[in-house]
Length: 114
Ligand code: AMP
Image 1 (cartoon, rainbow, N blue to C red):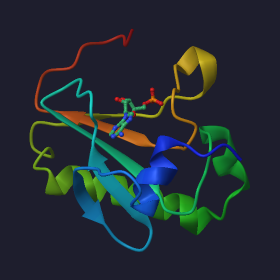
Image 2: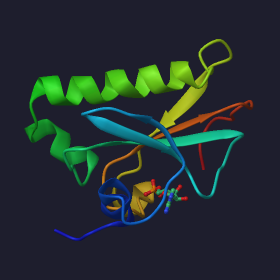
Image 3: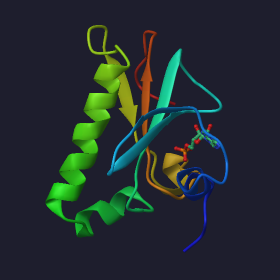
Image 4: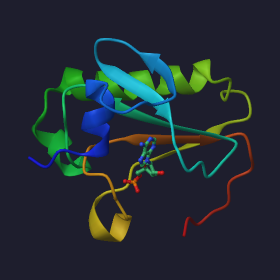
């Protein structure tokens, strides 16, 4: 399995601006923010793409999404709202092959996405 930049962040080999960490997930600020608040949440147990979630334990998947909601709340985004983005594959423009949820907030989003 390809070692990604997020594997290196998780291993502590490269720094990240962490905003939340527990036994299950790590959340850190995106280096190239697309909104005033742009945080990435990754599971500590590696998953490469969204498709792989169908083969994982329901509890593991549920816990990941619960943590995403908790981190967004802790970032103070609940009242005004926010967007969760998970890119998959070429058409989804996934560039890092380690699953991650983007939490984007702090400004009005538009629809449809590009
Ligand atoms: P995606 O295109 O969905 O795979 O998103 C990957 C995201 O990772 C992009 O928004 C990048 O800006 C972000 N990124 C890449 N390297 C780092 C890093 N070292 N620390 C934080 N975010 C990163």
